[in-house]
Image (cartoon, rainbow, N blue to C red; front, side, top):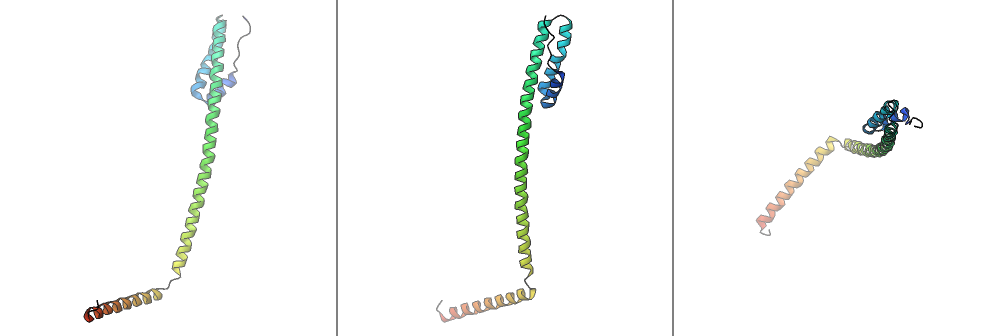
Length: 137
């Protein structure tokens, strides 16, 4: 007969938090132990205890792995977002500098530049006409 098998209800409940798909069978087998032991099915109670321990341990392992991977992914995403924010900040500063340098232009200077370009165009057209009439073109 021996001692009644004990899996530890706290561990089984904690396995529900780690990986509930495996924690549920661990809890079911844990609850079966008392019933089977009370009916005199000592071998069945021991089998239920073994299954509960197996599901509990697998739930702990898979839960720990998934939480560890989640933490690693979270840390990587923080670094990636930090790098993206730094890059965006540098781009914004560059745009602000460009905007400041464009703000230094005076509209009178731009008007004078346009007039000079118009005069150059007229001179070029005149030179083309002169070349066509002289026959050197």
